[in-house]
Image (cartoon, rainbow, N blue to C red):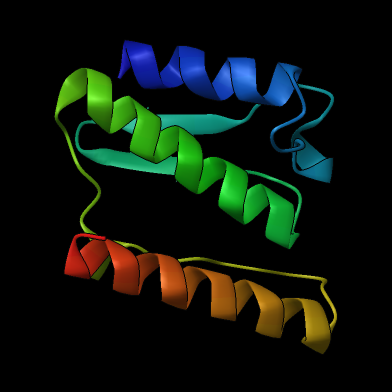
Length: 101
């Protein structure tokens, strides 16, 4: 988790994804508990892809892989068009993940 924490902090610093508006003041990008991880980010497609890339990169270091069947994406305050784009991205990412592509 320490490696993943550093990757997420570095990703926010370098603009891979942006803080959730309510977390900006605290500079809170994620919380981790035992085997659970919550990532807070601005609701847009770029953030979804950026976070996915960071999770995939952390797998290279730790060998701990995301369980796609236990993962959820919560989105608030986005347009229907942006939501459809995000759903499309996450569906194709999870499909590629499950197929090993």
